[in-house]
Length: 224
Image 1: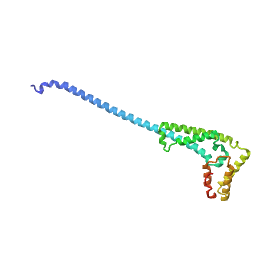
Image 2 (image 1 turned 60 degrees about the vertical axis):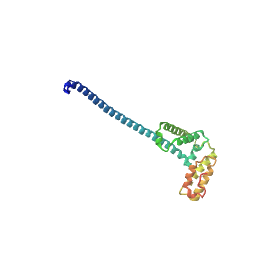
Image 3 (image 1 turned 180 degrees about the horizontal axis):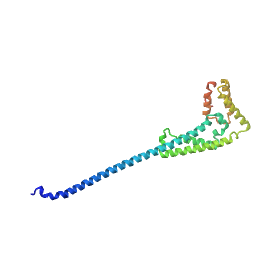
Image 4 (image 1 turned 135 degrees about the horizontal axis):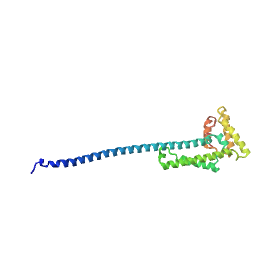
């Protein structure tokens, strides 16, 4: 049996094979390293894009919520102010198709508005809410334009006189400088003048009654 030295001629080919394996392993490891770096870069880019989209979505949602609030504020200018409502009575007359349409649109927009704005990040939910707010804004604009065009034109001269008396009485009822008796009497007379002419929103009656609560007799505080 020969010694290892007898196989010295195998060292070179085996060395070459081992060297080739080592080179391939090193290349493979380097490729894995580069692939891992690229994957992390892609993930980071994706996260940044998702964040950008989310931030953009939240901006659009905030604008839609603000638009909803703006239309509500315009409506409250009628609902909470009897003097303004007396000038434009169509805004609470649900016999008018335009008025009914805007009130229905308001109810739908209000119903679709979530307590947590993040719920609107779901595309379908936001699209439904956004369209409802757009419908509400458009319906309100249309009704308001017609109400301001017509003002009190649908009322007879006698009815318009009653509306004007009611408007003056409302001013007295809300006047802190008037006596309690004057404010109480003015409020009652105003409600009598408006009876059968316009629909007084409970919120408007309540707000006025709260302002003159000290002048109203016990039991008179609720909207009639």
